[in-house]
Image 1 (cartoon, helix red, strand yellow):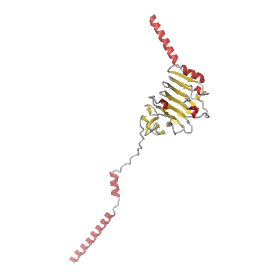
Image 2 (image 1 turned 180 degrees about the vertical axis):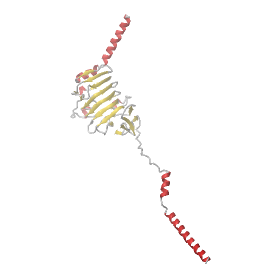
Image 3 (image 1 turned 90 degrees about the vertical axis):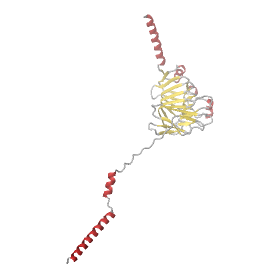
Image 4 (image 1 turned 60 degrees about the horizontal axis):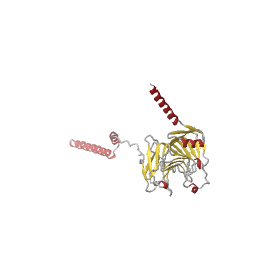
Length: 318
């Protein structure tokens, strides 16, 4: 009996420790958030209770483990570091996204607004995975989301205006520096995607630093919107299969892996055929001039013939 009590105590203590270990940790400052991410165990949830602002490039958030970062409510915003006086050449080869999932990382973002990034709001890098649930991204200099050989799962994502010169929502790319990697940029639709701007909601990179050879698309069975292959472009469709957004063309030589788009077929109401009874009725009611004239001629000839016969009879008997 004592042995049973001893093992039961050990089990309860172990279970309690496990539950405490995965409890959401609440943070309120950028430094607390960075520390919590650095010290997080795989599967931990970090809840941001107040909006924060990143002051420089050293404040960007990266992770190579599975964690959840969520806002305590819908008004929580992470404001990035952005300086438009800094040239693109100064940014070359540097990661200036607000949140990046590195290789082996799996970051779940919930109930957050990301604004004012020097480059992108979110980046999935070389196999890194990011899921976006009730997330809005706005006013990021290069674009909202970068699939740099990584994967983004969209549960509910709202895009404002992102990109310099032209809108750039979700950029599909694979850096030439990742040429040796087998990871391809991919997207998983598991809900809804909405954008304030309809152009370039999905855009395939076409600069000299891009080495994309393929794009992988997956649509969950329960998703409302879908990403589908339409020729050499990708389209986002709504619940009725109508196209909401259409991308530019995928680079020559690169290939799609995903479901093909099939347009809706417009169905018109069939014309009801005329019934035989209606045809018969119309024919019987229609006056035939030729038939009427023949009847009158016949009657006239009959009367004349009868009169002639009568006159001949009288002459014979006089």
